Amino acid sequence: MESTPAAVLDDTVVALDAVLRSGTVGALDAREMMDLLRVAGEIQRRVEAVIVDAVASADPRPAGSGEPAFCGRFGCRSRNELLQRVLRTDGASAARLVKSARLVRREVDLSSGEWLPARCRRCARPSSTGRSA
Image 1: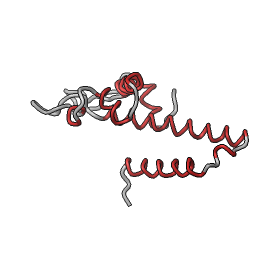
Image 2 (image 1 turned 120 degrees about the vertical axis):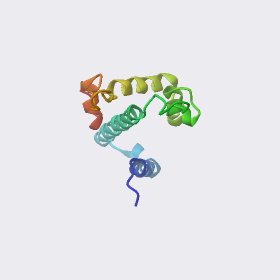
Image 3 (image 1 turned 90 degrees about the vertical axis):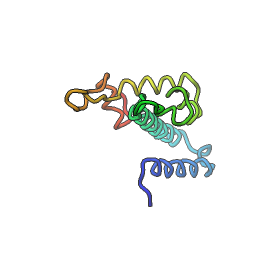
């Protein structure tokens, strides 16, 4: 059994598909519907945190002279375009994710090689829990 992050999320997609196929969502009472909405919101925040973390981890600059940047390897001009294609989302949503990634991205200090803090320290920490600061 594969335990890559993508494989774990694939399992989550299968579980969500099972909930949708079950046909029970429409039959929930008010309290159960509120619980479902609460959990769906928790899932949504964590999915966005995974996306932001992935975008922040992908170096926007080319690895070497003559090499394309991360987005260029997949035929896109920018990270925004890449997200629009892979997430099937609109430009504004992709821009929001790119902006969030820019705030949480940690650069390496050129002189010491140490990790520098994120531009927005309050934003960087919550991505691990999916909760806002």
